[in-house]
Image 1 (tube, protein in one colour):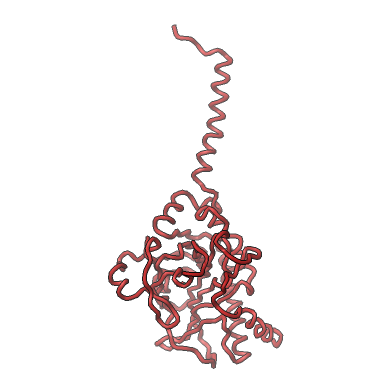
Image 2 (cartoon, rainbow, N blue to C red):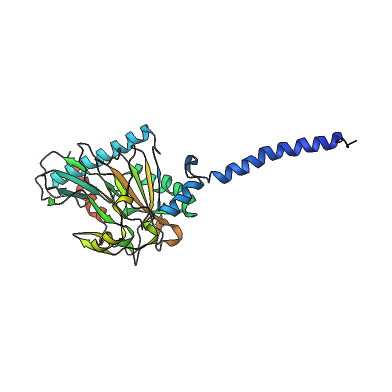
Length: 317
Ligand SMILES: O=C(O)CCC(=O)C(=O)O
């Protein structure tokens, strides 16, 4: 005859089983959901980030938050265009080009950290929390190297000198602009203010290219992967278009090769592109989650000049 468990043993068995079911399963849960914002950065995303060089979080921000992003972008653009007209000079924050088809298009705008508390807080609070599980470190926003890429047509006559160009971004890695002086392990984080589609010029990435380095050549003011390297080492079939709804977030390693085509739609294709680096890799001062890496690489801070013109416009309104 087998031995029966004593009442004390039965109690212990039940007690420890309950403890294991509660705390054991929580332990597994905690380790699968590596403390990302809203649990969105899980282990598989961390692996993808290291393997492919990027991750994509569709609809990260709610529709309500997207409306705030859009209205902030509209207000800033209106202020910069109106103050440029009022002062009869194009704001140095704005990069506006005239395409071959005659369309005037706002390509990019920077710096913006001094113009928008909303955009600054996204860069100093939301994004560093998303980066934490990817970097294992606190990330710091590089304020003067973050920009808003509008890809937005302007219908009115600005009566200002606008250079001929295009709204395409050449095939490049961002790191080549910083190599030799910039903080290591930089990340690029793109917040979709509008839906991004192939038609309106969504960003395209070449997965895994962050593991190699590519020779770039000059194309006007931009750098792009040299033609020979493109032919030899990049397969257009491996390019991925990162399409998704407004409010989505794309995070990629600054060495990843990427580009984007023209906006052939009628609406804007706006994205915030933030540059961040781990705190330990930044030399120089950090203030409230923002750094201006040294040397700033851009001469005199643009915002210190531009804000005087912007205030003049607001005062005259
Ligand atoms: O906004 C885009 O379409 C691309 C931006 C980009 O490539 C960059 O900022 O380096």
